[in-house]
Length: 342
Ligand SMILES: Nc1ncnc2c1ncn2[C@@H]1O[C@H](COP(=O)(O)OP(=O)(O)O)[C@@H](O)[C@H]1O
Ligand SMILES: O=P(O)(O)OC[C@H]1O[C@](O)(COP(=O)(O)O)[C@@H](O)[C@@H]1O
Image (cartoon, rainbow, N blue to C red; front, top):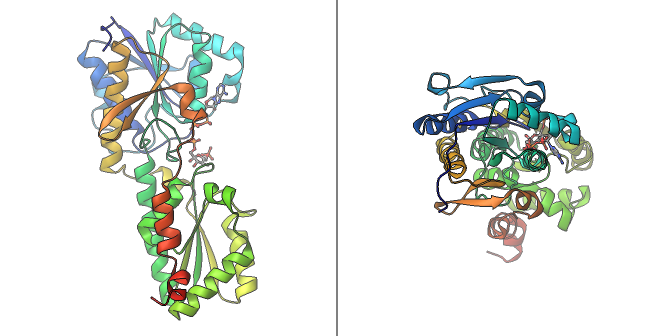
């Protein structure tokens, strides 16, 4: 462990989308900093706040009872203009004017690219904390918000199953995760969905309407009257769940219904897992700053904490668990089961 540095003032932003647990992370950053006598400033609306010099001081009174709420008390935003070199220079000037020693960026891979961009124009320390429901960052087992998003999707899938089973219907439930199928795979497994259409699987072997119809018919042959619930990751089908439901209904001549979960997955009470993860990572971020570390993401690995260079978080890919995919697709595939005669 490197020796501890004297840090007087740190800044924090939440950037990109919001994710359940971001408030818990802000709380942890503030309480830890306060413990060590470090002041905390928040810039509101992510990088936009750094550019607009829109800031507020944060102390214990601002963060005491926020860990049970989603959203973020310091607001989040996407900022196209921050990608320009002049914008990063402007942000650096604002940070220096406030005598900020280090910046904590809570967000996803885009936010970390932004942090890396800023570090080319600013001498302060920069630490990323993984905050995205998509869980698509290399270097941390989980990201803040992912667990809550999966719970929300699972809850919706359970409810959909009730109607699907009562009325022998096909449902297509569209979940978030534009580039990664973590929410799709976990929620499908947790709810026992019959089919998953995920970015990683589509890249390998894209499903077609014909292949989906074939599978639904085979399931119905094996099970008789039954429901069929499919999890579709967003942007994986032209026209999404609505269009796919129409296409299937045309071919199957039975009711197929779409259900889009959208931003419901970004809200609601953060799970205990997300609150604890966010707390640990917020503390970890401040400890890394005190050790003089910069340019890394604070994450978890197994039971422990981990640090990953920012660029690796988006350059290296965290893959889906093949074991989970195999369980879902091969072992629990009812078509194969009947062919084996078991
Ligand atoms: N290549 C980049 N250079 C500089 N800033 C970036 C870059 N990519 C993203 N950002 C900044 O990070 C913000 C959040 O990124 P985005 O991809 O929207 O969300 P997330 O952090 O959740 O992945 C962007 O709106 C932009 O301000
Ligand atoms: O809220 P927006 O801007 O419509 O963005 C939606 C996207 O944000 C997410 O919820 C989270 O993505 P990021 O981590 O990149 O912000 C995605 O799953 C979804 O595609």
